[in-house]
Length: 389
Image 1 (cartoon, rainbow, N blue to C red):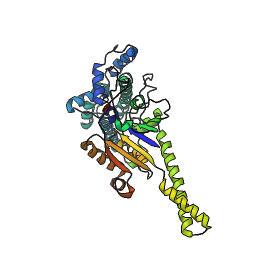
Image 2 (image 1 turned 90 degrees about the vertical axis):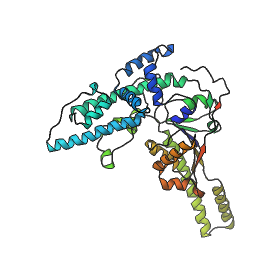
Image 3 (image 1 turned 60 degrees about the vertical axis):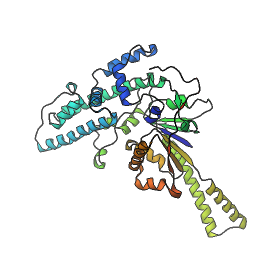
């Protein structure tokens, strides 16, 4: 089995404007009627971006800092709110009352941050009212992002391909992206039967807010003693959104198949070793078992995992660990430059731990290699068209 894992770096390597900064620029410069077939969607965008709390905050943050990660900022705000909930509970238990309520609609999230820190919010109304308001605005933001990706990015002319990816014989694709870039650029042969798992959902112009299955949320931040009982902000978390929106989890079937095959292999190998160690049986049986053991050793089950354009961030720890930590899975991680290589190694320590990283990158237990990305090459087919943007 050959599995390809792709993240946003895959789209960026193909020249696609898929950063959050690109999306923020789109929300300022979208053009209703630019593409006649998407006129209705552009009208929808106009409605979605109007007075959206998250969008307003992200733009302000980007203006001040020059870079923004949506998930990180969402997590920062939600954790501030969660911390305030705990403090409110302490105040209530002590019978100390609460302070003045400030409606969320009158503030940006930056103002909200200041309000929380200064204690200018009450305990019940503020949290309950504004949590629902923020969740609604997040869903509208995600739908707006879906329109951007479906109407523009999935129609964008790609003029170059990766020789690394083009040379691979892929069976499965696990995509952390919302776009269909691999499908439309590399999966072009009709006889191909590649299976796809869009673990964070897939952009579809025919969706609406209710049908949208794109996951844009945060990792679990609560400690063990709270995460199973304090569910005030569960709807903002990725694992909840994956379940609620019914996104892909086909990769679990792939992993199960890999592990079952390895279990059968190890069991058969063990049986042969025990039989030969005991020395019982007829001569021809012993020779058969020796031959079988030799064949097993020479043809151990091997599966290949290729990771391209994924940061190996800890937010995807569970998925990455399930894939990488199998002794019959050999992982190739592509990197564009030395600086990014350093970041990937550091992130991988957080994902699988220092001990596993050392064990799997050297000696006879080596299952992980890092490969520099080859230079992107021009597409030689008729796929190169005029850009839609």
